[in-house]
Image 1: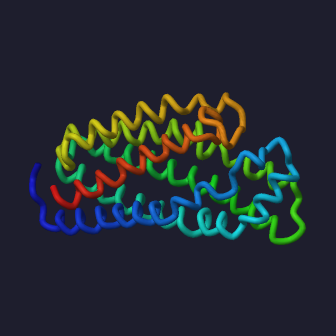
Image 2 (image 1 turned 60 degrees about the horizontal axis):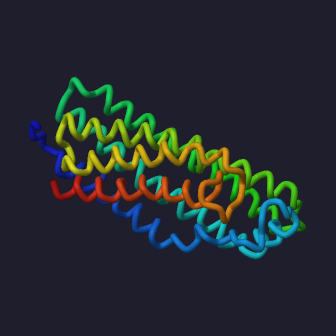
Image 3 (image 1 turned 180 degrees about the vertical axis):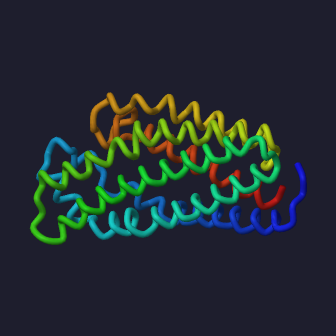
Length: 229
């Protein structure tokens, strides 16, 4: 890989934003489990709306503040990754563009899902419409779940391929990306498992969350690798 002046700065800035984004995720981790529970199933619309009403502040902090900050870290990391791949191998510019482009789609899907859930939380600041609260939350499930997971799988696969081809990150991070991509793709059919929030292989269960977590873990190790390599 050729050495280009300024690449060290790109690595430090992009990798630093990536690490910072993951730190925000860890700080906000408890918020991802607020607003769910066995006593508040979606089927009981009124009870579920009451739960969202009681936890709307925490939901808004997660969806409107912390998640966008995490996405900022991912966006800067992806921009730096694209730059390094293009500098290392001009003939792999297409894969660099694919990684960045798919990354934008993944970020957009996450933010759309956040917007829907934030809208549901905002609706509860006044007299909530239980049907509207449920509909907005259910509308976010495909974004976080099947649709987002399939696109995340493509992002991870293309990033892993780019890493193996150009060496801009440590090679083992590429194999982790491939494993995370397979995991995300395997979890995507959970959309067919219904809407049980407390279930495992369901549209909004723990399996989709673990798929997203696998992508975020790759995000962290790739960011650290970008800084130290």
